[in-house]
Amino acid sequence: MRPVVVYSSKTGNTKKVAEAVQAALPEGTPIRLAPEMSDISDFDLVYMGYWVDRGTADEAAREAMAKITGKKVALFATLGAYPDSDHAKESLEKGAACLGADCDVVGTFICQGAIDPALQERMRQFPPDHPHAVTPERLQRWKDASTRPDEEDCANAASFARETFAKAEMLSGG
Image (tube, rainbow, N blue to C red; front, side, top):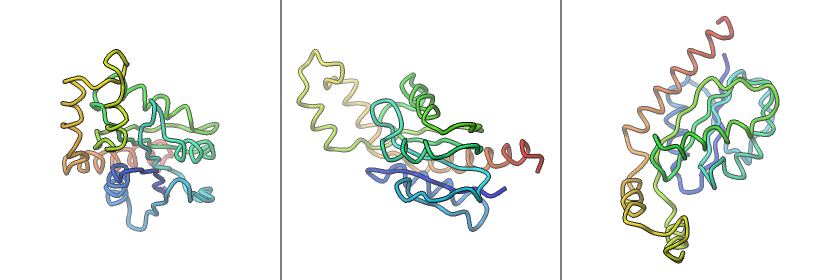
């Protein structure tokens, strides 16, 4: 089973998770930025990481994901919302829908990541009746996210990598 890690990261959150995933996989597993993804035909399992943008994978990740066909894929993502929220679940589902034809998603992982300060500033300009207006709850979520992904998130990402690798090997009869 030959894995590869491909990811997109804007603020470094997803990069941190991608590195934890790679470290848990067999030595020599390559890691690539999504915009630089080249031919992956030699790989059996693609770990595809993205940051959530408007409820789905970011643009660079979507472009790379559309090129992945006929592969086992393990999806991982970071977002500002809580990882057990409906938004997180839907963001993984919408991300999976970005994959090319005949992909088999063998697992998913999502964790909270610090929110881009520029995005926070834009949201502060929204009127109080806007769906993304700043509220006490939103401010708390921003605070909670400010130190994420943390060591526990990275350890959980590593466990996800090991578990999905074993599952993919089993599914391949390896």
